[in-house]
Image 1 (cartoon, rainbow, N blue to C red):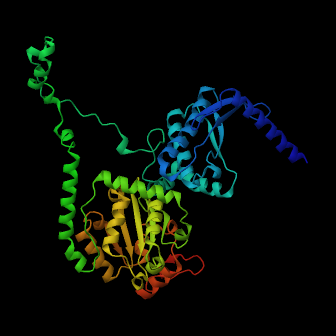
Image 2: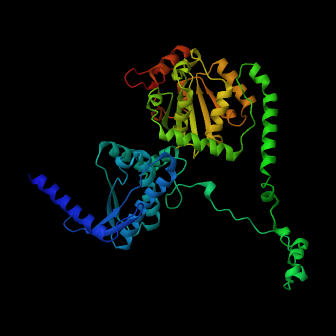
Image 3: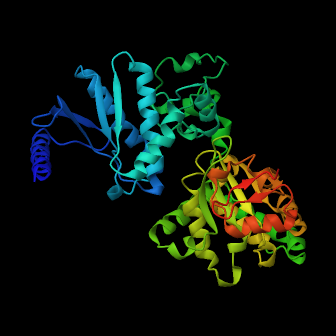
Amino acid sequence: MRVWMKHTAVLDCMQQLDLVLQKNGGCRTGMAKVTSGYDLPARRIIHTVGPKYAVKYHTAAENALSHCYRSCLELLVENGLQSIAMGCIYTEAKNYPREPAAHVAIRTVRRFLEKQKDNITAVVFCTVSTTDTEIYKRLLPLYFPRDKHEEQVALSKLPADVGDENGETIIDERKIRIKPLPKKSVSRPPELLVDPLVSDVGMAHRNSSYLDSFLDPAFMSMIKDPDQRRLEQWEKTAEAQRGWNCAKLLGYGDLGGPPLSAAEEYSLHSRYLSKANSLNLSEIAEMKIVYRGGVDSEGHPVMVVVGAHFLLRCLDLERFVLHVVKEFEPIIQKPFTIVYFHSAASLQMQPDLGWMRRLQQILGRKHQSNLHAIYVLHPTFGLKAAIFALQLFIDNVVWKKVVYVDRLLQLFKYVPREQLTIPDFVFQHDLEVNGGTGLIVDPRTKYVYNRP
């Protein structure tokens, strides 16, 4: 009964605080306001509103959440307070993933303490679930290492992007770039210094080369007649279809069509992502063909692909592409890694190169530029021939990043074991292919050890 009374008092106090906050104009997402602690055991209560999460606006949600924590800490310093207990601002009701949100929270606090360490004595992270507790226990030593050993571990396991000086996500494409003025100094013609007569204005503009000297030829070359652009596109399509007929005859599929421009790839990717977010693709996700792993040895996020689960005969390829776009979207904004398990996949039918080319176009150029490596486990001669064809006919840059791995222990040099969820048959296939030499598999934990 005493505990119930305590909870009732806390709820009454929180309701009173909400009314006070509403009278003061409320609080917007990412902002913070401070009120008195009233009957709660605290001098001040700092209120903030966390963002809603959507994959399409992943970066905006990250920065808004970072601003929540930073605003709370700024109010702490402004009000002369030295310690704060912070709960997990993200909630399941707003669909924010727990672990990415914990990264944002801890790195924002770390960045703030780097500047205000003399004004703050303690920041306490309060968790109300065992899941959050385990996440914070695992991540806090990465951002706040207590000794040299933890510092070395943190260097290998921290994400590639740990934010800017405030902990917000860095986006190179959005940086402001100011082009320097032309070095050539052009003196203004003397006849333009005097205001010309109205009848001579048109003649003066036609004869003047003053503005022409400041025009950027690269910018002007982007302006083309729409009919001319369409004619050029038709000519490229016809030429590409004539050129790739040999690939179709070799059984690699239809590789016709010209390469897409950056704007066309962006538009294509946006359409697929919008459609993917509007559909329920749970039946594709349950097949475990593509799923998210942890991070590799350099801190890059990992996407796992299981070739044996790719059942071409009973798979809707269009819905599968939508699922791939949805899964890849959060990680292709930064450097990332792909781990492909080809174990026992040679028994399944595989898509042709024409389909692979289309998928690569849909994923867009960020996928190509941010891809760190593709680790292929248990490759076969047929797979190596297919990858060579991908390098030859589709993209020599992306498919040059393939690294062939024959053993699981070799793969663990690139991606730590604890960062991967590996199907059981992959362990069995590794034992069969390698004859069991050098490996021991624990059937309970599925961990792999060196044979003594």
